Amino acid sequence: MEGRSSKRQTGRASRTKRELILNVWRLLKRPGVGEKELRAVQRAIDDQFGEGAVDSPAAIARVLADDGAELRHPEVIEFDARWRQSRIEKGGGVIDGLENLVSTKPLRLKQAEGFIKRLERVRQRSERAGDQRMSRHVRDTAINARVVAKSLSKNQSLAEPVRAEQAEIAEWLGVWIQTPNLFSDWLELRRRSSDFRKKFITEKS
Image: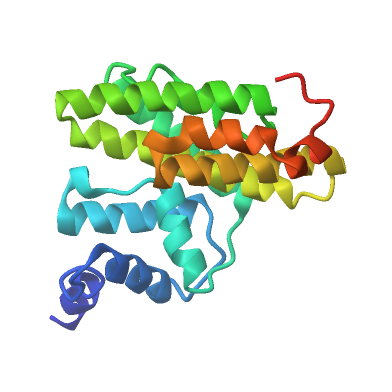
C-alpha cells in the first residue's frame, strides 16, 4: 500500500505541471539535468495530464533551471532537437523543418532573420487556421532557438564576434516572441542604431 502511494505521489499530489516537474526532480534527488531526467519528467506529465500536455525537453529544462537545477546543456539541446524532429514526423512536417536550424551550430544574422521570417509565416498561417497547437509549437521553437543562442553567446570557445552575434540573435528572438507583429519594424530601427552599426559594421545583411 505504501509502495503504491510512493509511486503515485509524483503525480496525483501535483496540481500543476510546474509542480509535477519539480516534484519529479526532487524525488530523483535533484541531479544534474540531461536526457534521462527529462524523459522521467515527460513520462510523469503523460501519466497525469495526457500525451498532449507533454512539454518539450527545453521547456522542462527551463523550469528546472529556474529552480536551481544544473543543466547538461549539450545533452538537453540534442535531446530537445530529436524530440521535436519526432513530433514533426508524426505531424507530417507541418513546420517545414524549422527545428533543423535550431542546433549547436551558430546561426549568422542573415540566417537568423530568415529563420524568424519563416517562423512568422507559420505563425500567421496557424493563427488564420485557428490551430493553437501549432501556434504553441512555433513559439516553443523560437524559445528553444533563443536558449541555444544565449548559450552560445557565453561559450568562451567561440570567437568574440560570433558570441556577439549570438547575443544579438537572442535579443531578436526575444522581441519576436513577445511582439511578433512589431518585429519587422523593430528590426529596421535596430539596424539603424549606432550600437548595431558599431558591432556589426561588416555584416552584409
